[in-house]
Length: 147
Image 1: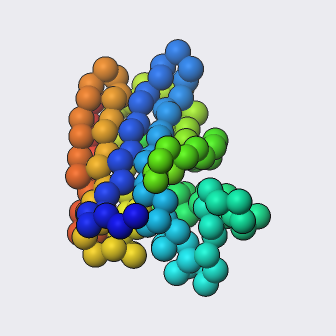
Image 2: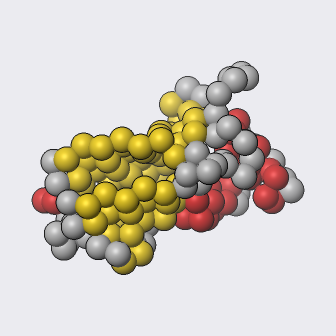
């Protein structure tokens, strides 16, 4: 299925009682396939019965390269949890363990911008009961919030 716009949506929630930030990224499967095929010279066939054995590892690495988060000016380790299919969209679940109070939050998101000139990455954050949304593009990759 072809779609004329290129967009990903990333939801970031701080869950203090679990001492973590939960991140869910929604990416069109065909767009992600195109980016991974370009990078690895092989089609990963994500979610099909002939998905390459290394496809999930490629996704994990790709997401870590493309989404970076700093909290209180310190780069964070983003831990990959799982992927799930919802129609023609791939949901990618990741998390960050954090037990400190969050004073500054920086997000860098360049998902698919190397593949699609007009890619837009929407980021919704819910941190310290404070909701914010950003639109990141291939010219604006990052955003910073002070609490």
